[in-house]
Structure formats: C-alpha cells, structure tokens
Image (cartoon, rainbow, N blue to C red; front, side):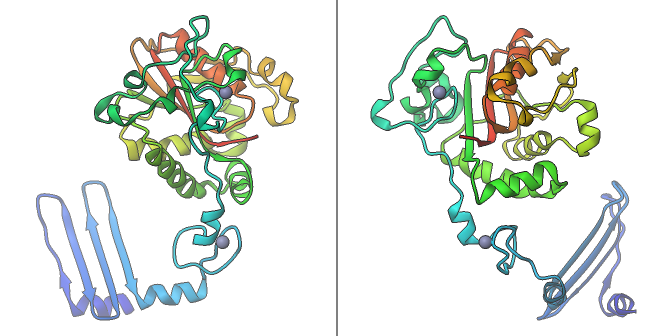
Length: 313
Ligand SMILES: [Zn+2]
Ligand SMILES: [Zn+2]
C-alpha cells in the first residue's frame, strides 16, 4: 500500500532504447525512493534513502566486526582500522619481510629464478620513474632459495585485529568480508605505488574441487575478483588447477609443507610472454605460491608477481 501511494504521487514511466520500461521516483526532504525496471539484463534498481534507512539501522544496527561498537557504514570502526598492521616498505621481494632501509641494496643472483631487476624493469608503464631501489631488495634468507616467482607483495601482518576477520572469511562462510579485505589490499597497493598496468592476467591460487565444495567458495578467487575489478586486469580462474587433494597446509609442520604441495598444480594454457599477478590469502612458508608460480613459469609465463592479503610471521 505504501509503495502504491508513492507511485500515484510522482510516477515517471518511460520506454526508451535502453529498454527501461518503468522508472518510479519519489523524493522529499526526508526520504528518497526510486525504482527502475529494465529489460536488457532484467535489472531492478531499488534505492531507499532517508528516514527509512534510519529505521532499518535502529532495527538492525551496524556494528564493528572487531570491537562491536556501533558504526554508520562499512565493517569496522575507524579506531580498529588504525590498529591494522600493514607491512612497511622496504620489503624483501622474496618473502615480504620488512627490512631496515639501511640494509637495502640491489643484488643479482643469476643462479636463482629470483633476480633483481633495475628500477625501470621492476614496474612498467607511466609510473616507472616513481619506483625506487626499495623494490629490488632481497633478504639473506631468500638469496639462498630458488624462488620461482619474481616478486611478492603481502599487505598486512597476520595478527589481530585482522586475524579473526580473515579466519571468519576463510573458514566460516563470511564471504562478504571480501569487500573489506579487498579494500585494505587496494589501499596498501596504491600506497606502495604498485602499477598493475603491465599485467596481462590476474589468477587466484586454486582450490581442489572437493575442498571448494566443502568451503563453498575459494577465498583467493574472491580477493582476486575484487583486485581485478579495481585494477582492470583480466581475471582468469580457468588457467591453473589443483589436481591432487592433499592435507590442508595449516595442519602440517612447516618443513612438510613444500612436500605436501609438490606437483599438485596443473596449467593447461601456453602462457608465453604473459605477465601474471597470482593472488592468495595468506603466505606462511610460501610453499603453495611457489608451487603455483613454478607451474605458471613452466608454461612460459614471463613474469609472476604474487600478491597476498596477509603474511604470517
Ligand atoms: Zn572497532
Ligand atoms: Zn626474503
């Protein structure tokens, strides 16, 4: 009855080339309601502003996911956001470990996949001149390893207050927290001057189909989807597959994790000259992303940059 009375107040019904068949709007000082029906993609636009929203906030007040303080919008309050520990540059491009600025220098290791590029090569496009030598740092531990990706960027330390949220996102079906987590990643990547323009593909670390059925979604896919949409890098989840079901990495000791993921990923496409962003949720030992990157490089990917939401210490 309420809506019918509004329609009679100020209806605007039109039929245009864009297939909009009805547009109904009502607006006054305190409220705005608009309904739009379109035929092209069966889209129904429904906007309610004003005191109707206020009523819904009274019935279902929005609370900070971390401290449960009342908030007007978003998932967490400003105070809790301030407590999130972002990883500070300069970081090691092999393990994303924070390094002291005074210890940073460019090292070249021809025997390893991981090699130091000049600042111009490390990021292409218009922002090249902004990239500093900090992006070419490799820590002592990573110099001894044969790391198959070219660069790792990890955004947040896997600690409270964000640790609980990531756990909810990953294991408890809070898939909609992807919106918050992706926004934190974007904030970080913009701050460190990450230039996505050079990349051809955005690929999430895949889940085994059985694991996917248990969890209902691949958390890395949701993160990659958000980043892909913002940075305008095509998302592809049909390139790399997890072909063998192995025990979860979280249940294994660190020294067993590399063996556990050995040869579990398969890539079918030829990736010659493709520059790829590989997305995962958390890096612990780096075993999973290394195995993924190895499979991509075996199919001739020319550059693999790994981006993870969080880094466990
Ligand atoms: Zn809070
Ligand atoms: Zn390192």
